[in-house]
Length: 318
Image 1 (cartoon, rainbow, N blue to C red):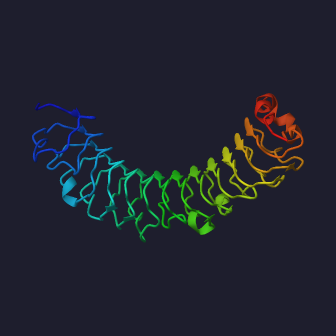
Image 2 (cartoon, rainbow, N blue to C red):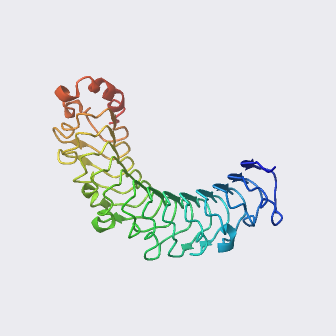
Image 3 (cartoon, rainbow, N blue to C red):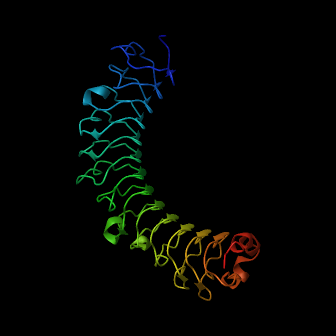
């Protein structure tokens, strides 16, 4: 098969692969061996490989020799294996790697530094990580997407790359997000913090490009103050919020989606949503409201949008 470019062997029950099996496939660009029973990375892979998918196997260790000579590799998917740690030399030859997926392993620690200068997508969700060494993210100057959801983190990792557009930290053990942790992330558009133990969040106003902020299933008693003006989606559902004030949504002219359901809201201050002229989705069900806060919407600026709000507002519970 001297001109083969893509090889897919899914769910084939493969337990081992002989040395040099794929070495002669000089034109191979994509190799997918997901959902097998492999315990190690196949050896002597063709140097022209660009995509390697080994998800859902039983690989338990990574070595520098596993990816030797794979200078053209762009995508490496190792999710749902048994990898316990990532040694700093593991990906030393993968200079052109753009996407690295390590979700659903047994990782309790990672070593620094990982030198992946062109990496744009990094996901280490659903592991057992509780911290990162200093300068772990130092070389990731092109990183756009980072997911650390489903770990044991108690604080936002330091030194996150300024290039980040999306940061996912759901299902951790965060109790507070501090100004100094995020103030340099001026390009961040999506910040997902649901299912933590947050009682407050400070510094969101310094994220000028933030459009999505998700804080569902935390322990917030108030809506975060001084939110950035470009925000389009705010999810504060399933918290402990009791009162909504006019100050909460000041300057949020671009807000389209607001979720305050499953709280203990009993009071809406007059004009609380008056500046939210773009609001088209408002959820207030499962609160303690004694009346429907229709007057909170600026009727003159919202116009016909009021009718689209009614179905959501009417689900409010006494």
